Image (cartoon, rainbow, N blue to C red; front, side, top):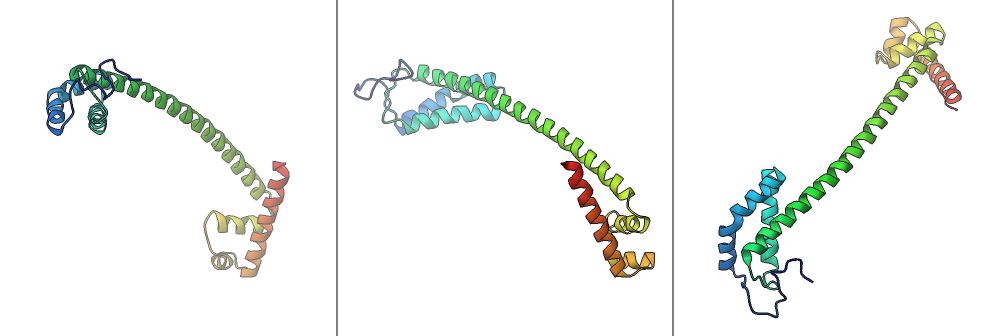
Length: 181
């Protein structure tokens, strides 16, 4: 079964035989016209060039099995069909892109809301810690100070700093586990 009426099975010896010379002649004769048609339809230079290139590539690859009666009709019909396929595929890709973008935006907004809620919970829990524990935890996590620097600044031992950080983390885990259930 053939897509175009102007193609016949290779049993018939009528039509154009594609040789390198005839291929080059077809390319020279029809490339620009095919490109203009594809460009008008796609409105994208690179896509139009690719469409025409694909048609000529296919023509060359199938040269031994094709028997073309009317090269002009065959090539112009091919570019028409290929550009229609391009438009259909582009519309499908755009629909998929829009769906993905919409889902991603919704998920991002949901995640942002969740992050803000979690930050609020964390702040509330940290603020409820005993004063020294809260100071040590904030210096460690918010200011990025080492245990040694915190101990020196608060005039306490490094062991006390470790104790307060452990206590703060345990309190956070406990409160977050009970609040998330």
